[in-house]
Every structure is written in C-alpha cells, then in structure tokens.
Length: 103
Image 1 (tube, rainbow, N blue to C red):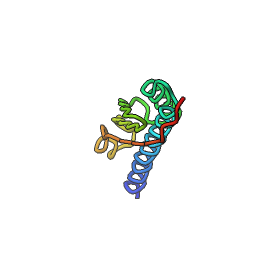
Image 2: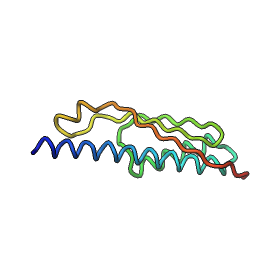
Image 3: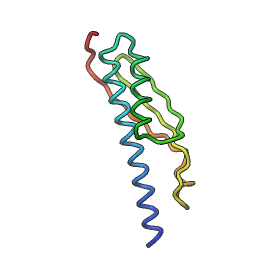
C-alpha cells in the first residue's frame, strides 16, 4: 500500500511540473504576441510564471519563434523515496502559440 501511495505522489509531482511548464509557455506566448521585443518579453514572462509555481532548481530553456514559445525544463531529482531517482532528470516541454498583435 505504501508503494502505491508513493507512486501516486510521484505521478502528482510530474503532472504539477507539466501544468506549470504549459502555463509558463502560454504566459510567454502572450507576452511575445504584444511586445516590441518578443524574445525578451517571453523569457521574462516564462521566468515569472515558473518562479510562481514551477519545478524548483530546474534548468530552463525558452525558444521564441514569432509568437510560438517553447519551454523545456529539465526537472531535478524529486524527494520521493524509491521512485524519485527513477524519474529524475526528465524533460518537461510546453509549447504555446498566440496571434501576433502589433504593439
């Protein structure tokens, strides 16, 4: 029973990271769509969104192509016993596109 509970906790942590990265990509795309400097605006929005609830201690890469923002996060080892070491170092990718709105 304990292994099942630990497994469910690990799945919840992975899902939390995916939702946070998807949200960060949407925030970055929104910022890029209305900014004169899309790359800078998107990177700032992604950083703010991830600092509010994303994976801590993660390596983040933000790519901006017009108004498509891709966020790749390499998640660190989680503190969940047994399963944390198995799923550590995974890449979580979020991608979002918004219509370009002139600044």
